[in-house]
Image (cartoon, rainbow, N blue to C red; front, top):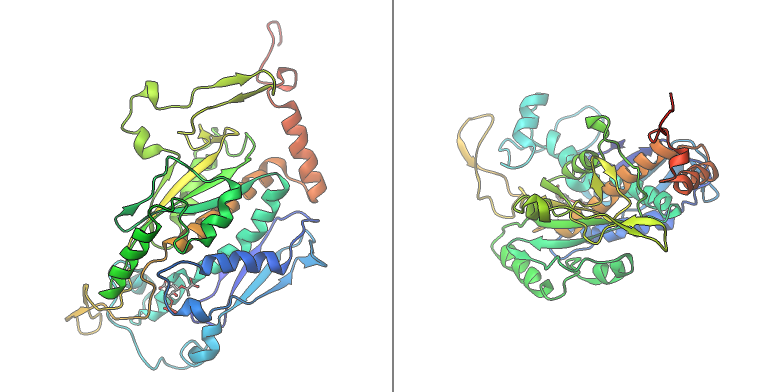
Length: 395
Ligand code: EPS
């Protein structure tokens, strides 16, 4: 669970269910938070938010205790100018925002919660909240690393500029992706993406785009076909869709596959005799069949709409007090947050995978969790251990 407002004192995240004995340090969390701040097109705020964190509980001497982990991320912005406006003490705001921004949570949130000041909604709806998700996600990534799982992301579209996704990055490519100002793996489109952002910035406009998330090394067996709400692709879809401004999610090559015939729309199954395992040579299903991870590469793409906050007031709206026509208010903002969204998506994928791995393999300590995982993997596909493969004559 995350808590916190964008210009409030801090963000807080509590993580429940991580086994004991996982090595977690401030440095790893801080590194992931720094990656989220990257990206050409971010607004001035990213230059002074340092995402200074404190681990309040659940970790002792660099190892998890099995108890809830609480992490606080301080908002530098609070001290600068928001102590009065965002004070929890009784009082009134100095400025009331009565012209909701179309595309933001403002109007629906104001009506639903009974506010006339859009700030009462936007402070929580803001994508600042994703810093808390990344802090928690850093812990999930450390847990996944113990299972041999690596999650990474790269930007595949900004505005109208799309990357070639026929070559997908591998874990060792993450450093090169992070060194790109737009977190793009296809270097041939990087300059065009930056030019697109510059052009939008010049006229006070914003841009959307897309990022792909890849998870290498995920074992077969996460998620389930037996209940709709336990399907891994459904869980990934919800987690990625919940990221502020994301409006579409695809698993694997879903969009392309929807246009194909069935005979060429799936991933044929092969048997590797030397390694004694099944394998696929295509990854169209995104590593999930029937809601279960197949042991293949997991991939998902999230599309983000252009940010609803603009540096020029240009979208028509209504003043909620006077009911007169107005333009949505001008607010300091990013031109695009697609590179950051990719990093957030990576951490949301890590959340889903870690959660499902813990559901399946369980364990109070990392030792127990890892023993359960290896015992499952050791007997996988062995019909002697399987209740599903009854021999003729069995009751
Ligand atoms: C955001 C608006 C901007 C972004 C913010 C998300 O904040 P501000 O209004 O303070 O300039 O900088 O993102 C972050 C602070 C962050 O850490 O990602 C919005 O309206 O969603």
